Structures are given as C-alpha cells and as structure tokens.
Amino acid sequence: MWWTLFEKAGRQKWEAFVPGYNYFVAFKVTCHKPFWSFLLLFPGVHLVMLATVNTSLIRRFGYYSFLDTLQGIFFPYLIFFKIASRKENVLSANPSDEVLNKILESNHPFLPETNWANSRETEQRKWGDHLVLFLSLPVLGHVIALALNAVTREKPGVKSKVKEWGDSILFALVAASIIRTYVFEPFQIPTGSMEKTLVVGDFLFVNKLAYGPKVPVTPLSFPLVHNTVPWVNIKSYSSLEKGSYTRLPGFGKIHRNDVVVFNYPSGDTAVYDPRMPDGLMGHDYHQILNDEAFYYWREDFKQRYPEKVDLILNKSAGDQAFAYELFIDTFAFDFFNSMAKWKQIARTEMAKGVTYCRGGMPEKGLNYIEHGGLIYRPVDKRENYIKRCVGIPGDWLEIKKSILYVNGKPAFVPEFQNLQYTVTNFEPASNATMIERFGLEKSRNDYYSNDGGQSYIMNLTKKQKADLQKRNPEAIFSLNLQPQYSDIKGYQPKASELLSNIGHFPKDLYVNNTITDFTKFQIPKKGQIVKINKDNIAWYRRIITAYEGHSLSERKDGIYIDGKKANTYKFSMNYYWLMGDNRYNSADSRIWGFVPEDHVVGRASLVWFSKSTDPEIGIRWERLFKLIH
Image (cartoon, rainbow, N blue to C red):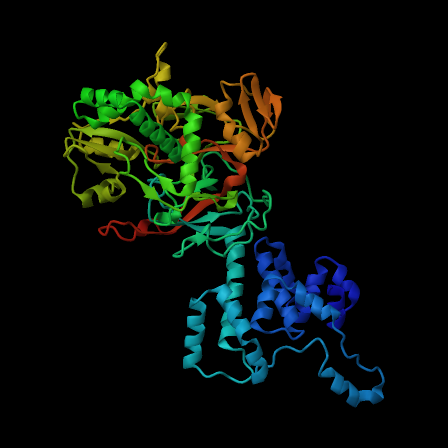
C-alpha cells in the first residue's frame, strides 16, 4: 500500500520499496525529521517510532480523530488501505487551468501541516492529541498540560499545550529508554548482600557498555520501569513480540571480581503477591516450592499417622524446635521417596493462589496466604540482582570454612568482604561510636545480640575485626561455620541434613553443600563438553532445561536429552559464579547456582547517592560519587 501513499504524498513509487530508506522518506514528508528513522534500529524504541510515523502519515491524509489516532498507533493498515484505494482529483498539467487546479488542490490527498490558527483543524485533532499524551504519561501529563493551559493564554498559530507536552514527554521517554537500555541504568541496592562494599540505600549506575548492552527480548514494554508498573502493580510488558538473546559489542568482558548486575536466574517463575515489594513473595520460587511440598506431605502424614506424631511430641517435652527436627529425622525419608508427587501438588495449589508454609512446624493455616498465583517472566524481565563475580567460565571453585578457593588458590578478598563471627567477652560502644569509629550500623544488622548481650553476632571485614580486637583484646571471635557432614568418612546423614541439602545448589538431596563449605566444581564454558551421569546431572539440570532449552529425562537406563540417550553434553553459553561480599547474608550462586551469560546486565560502576534508614546517619555524604571496585 505504501507505494500508492508515497505517490499521493508527492514522492516516487520506488522509494516505498527500499528498506530503511522508505522510513527515511516517510519521516521526512510527515515530520520533517528524516533522521528519526535511525531510531528504528533500537528494539523497543522502534515500536514508538513506528507508531509516530504511521500516525503522522495518516494525519497528513486527513485522519485526525481519536479513533483514527488509536488505529494509527496500534493498527494503521485499514486506514492505509482506505487511503490507497480512494480516488483523488488529478491536477491538470495545462497552465491555463490554474483556476481549476486551485479548486482541485482543496481536495488534494496530502494535506499541509496543521494550521494551529485554524480552530476547526485544532478541534479536529484535539482528542487524538489527548490520547498520545495519555499513552506517554497517563493522567499526570494531562494535569500538567491542562493546568498550564488554565494559567496561560493560547497564542494563535502555536501548538496546544496538550500537543506540546505529548511531543515533549514522548521523545524524552524515547531518549531515556535508549540510554537506560543501551548505555547505563540507575539501580538501588535493595538488600544487604553486598554489605559493606555496597550498602542498603545506595543508588548507583550500571554500565551496560562494559560488557555490551543486551537487546531486549521483550521490547513491547512500558518505558523506564522494569517488570511491574509502580503503584498499580501490573505487568509492564507484553510477550506478543519476542526476540532471542543478542548482545551488542562492548568495551570488554566480565573479569573475575567485577561487581555485576544480572537478571535473577531463578526468577523465570515467581509467586505473585501484590502486597509484597515488587509484587513477589520472596524471589526463589524453587525453594518456596520445596517448602510447600514438604508442608503438604507433613499434613498428610499427620492425618494418616496421628499416633506417631503424638509420640514425637511427647518425647520432645514441649520443645518445638526439637520436636520438628526429631519428626524429620524419624519420618522424612517417606517424603524423599515421593518428593516429585508432593512438588506437583504444591505447584498446582500455588498456581491457584495459595501457599501455607515457609518453614517451621506451624498448625495448619498459621502461615496461610492467598496471592495472585504464579507468574512466568522472560530473561530480561526477571528481577535485577547485584553480586561479585568470583568465578568465570572454566574456573574450578571450592569453599572450605568460608574461604573461597579459585583454581586451587585462595581467592582475592575484597576490602569490604565480611564474614560472620560469634563474639563473647565484648561490650559494644555507643551506637554513634560504633558507626563513626568502626563503620558498624545496627540498622544494617552489622551486630546484634540474641541473648541479652552475653554474646554478639557480628558481620565484620578483616579491618573491622582487627580494630575491634585492638579495642577489646579480651574479646573472643569465633567464625560461624556450617561444616559438611560429607567430610566425615562413613557418616550416614540424617533426614534433616538431607532436607537441608535442597536449600543449597544444586538442590539435590545427596549433594552436601552449605553456605560455608562447598564441594569442588567447575564453572561451565561455552563449547565445553562434559560427561553426564546420575552422579553429576544435578549440577547441570537447570542449565540443560531452563537456560539452554532442552528436554531432560532421567531414566533407569540412562539420561535422555531431547528424547535421545546422552552420555555427554556440550554447553551453548558461558556461565559465571556470583557471590555477595556479605557472605553470611547473601542469597547467591550458593543457593541458585550458575548465572548464564544472557542474564548479565552490566557492571556496577558508580554510587551517585546514598541514604541510610537510620535517622542518626541520614545521607552518607562520604559515599556520594564513589567508584565501585
């Protein structure tokens, strides 16, 4: 249809058939801004620019109304067909027909730009301009435009305030979207996992050019928000248009110990609860699923064998914690034998919008929550997390007593990395002194006591620990450890220990990893081929299925990938291992495993603002414009 429209607009037919150039021409004849056509190269922004040129084009053929504008933005093709099909008056080439041509020109198909001094033309396009402003900045844009219009006088021949604000906001959003998607993005530290390198209340910039910006997988999205529209808590994107993973060239690659922002790998499925921050009930759906599965099994067991449960409660003498552990160690092997069944039950109930238990042994209904069910998010719309990249593709990693080893050697220790100690014979100074002299904030849980001051749990950097020992030479600092039972030769693990295993990557009953001790393993590298079997498949299940899109079946006679028996697997992407500097208070790769390259967003570069939740501290002036190392 365009070749007919181009001719009616006074251009050559052939121009409509040249990809790229045709939009250059379309922007030129409609908006007098041909170079706007280059904005079509930016996924996401291209949808806004398509709507702009299509709406501008149909308006130059006389389609101004609210419904016309609505079609021009979302589906202009019916109007294109009308314009292409209608017969127009043809001007005479005879100079003596000047009077006739003037009459015919009044019905010429391609109209001049809007004459803002003509009230009829202005009225024609009023509601169409309101629609554009509403889609650019709902409600608030109208409040501003109408307020300004009320206190100022419209000048003849000048655009209306609604049109001015609509255009200004629209292209401010376009520019901001390009910068946010391809150059840098603001990010706020939501949790304490990177304390004290980055602290809660830090606002920083993420450099997307460092590793190359990702092209959006879901470009049809509300601008300047991530996956949820604030206040109304609705999804901010549509999956009608979807792309595949593409990364543009960057200035470098991910180096070991970079502070990296990435899409949460375990966030493909999430429990949607609009009452919670970001609309999520926790972020690790897979752990919630395990908790729910255990809950359903436990309730069923209690109904089937009430006398056995009563026996456990009698033995515990009212000690709930002891009763819970004794119950698991005595009966939970029954759960392990039917785990797949209970996970399916839990998954079905969670999809209906119901969860019961996040741990402990409460009475039925104590933690009952009704929520919005499950939501499924594409890679680029999963929650943004920030951690330090401690392992790159091909590295061998191991954790022994909280010490990380990379390729057999102790890893680099960042200046502000902190470990957790139980401290006895210690009397803390005043809150202000602890902040000023040692950099320890109670509001960040840098230190606290669970026993009335007999001992303190303290998260300390190497320097903070040395400074505190100097001030309190009699204090005893004991590193808190969760050692592996697998180090004990011939040890038979208890059911409670097996249950704990599914809380740490690779979330397998018989792989014994903890926060402070982790089995030696290798980070997968693109093109690397590994042997797979029943003993190591747990490490690769999620890579094969969730990240690289294959079907996986584990049968008695072996492992099947995409329906074919397989003894080896070749990785399609590079993977990384990321951990928080606040090692004891960080949900990181130790919980959810490898981070695929298509989840990497960029490198954290600069803290531009920081404010503490503690009113005694307020703005942390010393952190403003601080580079991140």
